[in-house]
Amino acid sequence: MSVPEQCLLSDLLHHRVLCDQGIDHGLGNTAWMHLPCHRLLGWSSRPSSLKLSRHVWRLNQLRGIGSQKVFVKGDPSVTDQQTLDRLPSLIDADLLNKNGERIASIVDFVFEPRTGNIVHYLVSRSDPRLPGTSRWCFTIDKIKDQQPGMVSSDLLSIDDLPLVKASVRQDLLRRSKNWREQLQEISNKATNRLEGWLEDPPWDDSIDHYDDSEQLIENDPLDDWDDYFEEGSTDSLSDSKKTSFRFSRDQEREDPWI
Image 1: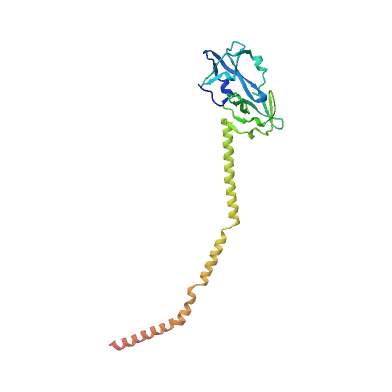
Image 2: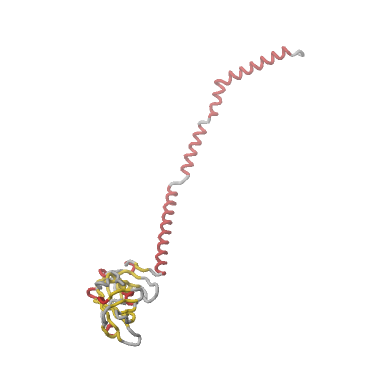
């Protein structure tokens, strides 16, 4: 059993704590944090639903994380829930934008189990207990002021943060936005082509074609028909007449009835 380099607080709290003596200390329920350094010091578990006592574990007691169990070494510190509620924490704190308006709430964070340093927080717009809710990554450098229950930032909207986990509704909205952008791009291309077609009317080519046809008509070879008859056809016609006249005289001479 090994400890990962990074882990979610929710994964740690949703596992049952099992010590090296094989005793089940129940599910985790509360994080023990040091807010000025953004560091996780430990967590607590609830050994029984009938008892008010809580078992507190230091982070250096963590020895491994399984699919459903967390393995620890050593004995826990025993306290109650009222004492744990007085410990400072940013979980469930309201995230405010630059105008002081609530835009989300901090519901989880990613930390390094060997050092306890918090890498970044995860915020949600809706109730985090609802299944399939979206998560946005909120880094520590965006925090302007903090106190238990409230965190101020320089953000204007939660959409300024990168989306880590999208819900079904958020995924549908993102796809719808992409479809609208694609349709708008297609519409713009069609509009540009239509404007270009109107600027260059197709009848310009027909006018050029009409001019060429007129030029062809002007160069009609039949215009030289008279010249043909004037130059060579007259002699040919005279020769044909002479031949026909000679043939008729010869025929008269040979016809016995004439």
